[in-house]
Length: 397
Image (cartoon, rainbow, N blue to C red; front, top):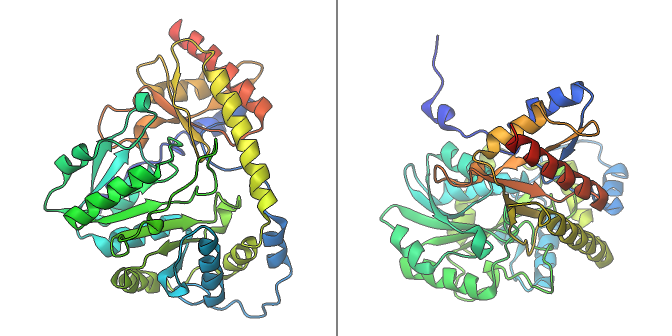
């Protein structure tokens, strides 16, 4: 029998999706599963975006430009200018989601066995993208007790070696919800310039910042033009996860020129999704004001309810819509599966994402979970109540 690749064997399973079969089995038993495991917002997609697709006049659904519609890229640049990020349309490549933008960035910057430093816990698919490219992830631990703030720069310097090509951050963070300060971004900027590295920032949650805090993009930092690569997406900003439209942005011409070759290999981003995404740029500010107000309320009630549980620790997110929770259990994977297979109360149970899959260092995050607070407040309260009862029953076994 032919064998599959070693790379395929090493490809990590998604900690967000790997428990899906158990959740589906629970549903078939008639159990209601409350999903805290995936960042799929329940916020309605802006009507203006959906109407743009409904009212299209296309007669031939042709390939679009490899780098994305010129009109759309120009409008993206206008959107960034409103956020004090000044780029031109030819410094933007439209991609099939932020995921493709990250893959293009890694392929552009790194060869096999090169290294990328990433603060952990991090978005689990970073591991997948790196594995697919034959790149080695070098993790640097950020800690719950520090609210997952940027680790000391001295710790980064210890990890920089001859094969280090880039540092990757997510700001605000998935799975932590941590928002890097301007000062932390400037520390990273000084570091990559000192060691002649690239700084990649996944900024897909830019709009979602709380408590008066402001997002500071790596593309706002002067002097970082040749080092900075930004990844973005419409998925969470406009609750358009299914559109699969993102972009890669850099003022480094060689980066854009090279990434475009990767883009040419997949021909073009989807046309209808670009139409929807272009229209979404006209979404009025009150839409975001209402969404942020709702997420702050959800965050506050979630944190309040979690703090009522015995021996449970939680980091307070400053952005995005995730938080990492430490539970009084040895193995969150086993516990999450048990909740789906063995636990129910009032004919309901909870699905969470075990956090070990968001770490690259073996053994870290084993007793942690990630919660996505993308549900209505009453469902969050119910979910935390169920989680607390499940912890009690699990401990009593």
